[in-house]
Length: 414
Image (tube, rainbow, N blue to C red):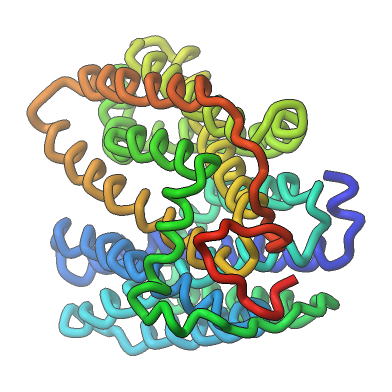
């Protein structure tokens, strides 16, 4: 990590993205609360998050865009455009304009998919290859760690002075993120296309086709697809853990969230060294195993095991994300990075969203401990499957030095 932060461009970019997370997380919770205040409806408030998820589902198209243009100007434009779009929320004054909140949140989700894929594709040009794991860890630490306090910041500002400061804060952090990209000294190579014969449909599906034909990517994808069928239960189960298991007030969930953030920070520091001694796949498998163990610990009605489980959950989320993104960057040709990242994001988001809805429905009918047992029973075999797979040889790098014969080479890709 010290080597990473000695790189000027890495410092600038990570600092800019870290500040952007402050605005994102503050707005995320505040918009749901604001819609609840404007309408009095829990369902209407929940639709703000649904609109965001719907926006994320345009990820396959985002991947094509990322692979068609230079990633640095794209990141600058999307950050500035999203900041301007967020300002449209200043026009909302009552329940009659709540549709505008949904529209902005949909655009927010679409922009998030573009930024995520462009960032994944840009990082291999930004930092040396042996520091990709540390770069992804630093970004995850900023994302997961800051979210411990920033939702409270958004909710507090909303309650104290209204929605306008939260909106302006988020818009401002997008400008900061765009400025950090503009300040980079990076000279990104051009994207000269040579895939027009594939057609639009072929381009959109190129990412998932490459991932499913490449064992190094296919195996983690299978494991994660199995795991996320129950991972979404964690959006509702913690409320029951606090109320029924620990017999605490709902506010105590903030303590567990803070412990989870601490675990995420520790996981971020450890991810790079663990990955160097093992592999990206082993880091993902370790994260899945930690998640299964955390689910079992949450079943107890004792505070110490629940705190350990919360820290383990923070660590496992970071490990899974860092391992997956680094693996994509190291095993995917540069010409396909945007589409592969977007395709895998889409493939994971759909079942995870379904598991969130399923968990919300089941928690009203069955004891939360059965949901935690189901999580452990599903996620543990997924971790075992991934850990038992042989490590495939490296057939492609994120800089496109080698490429599978089935995928056309894009001229101009380094």
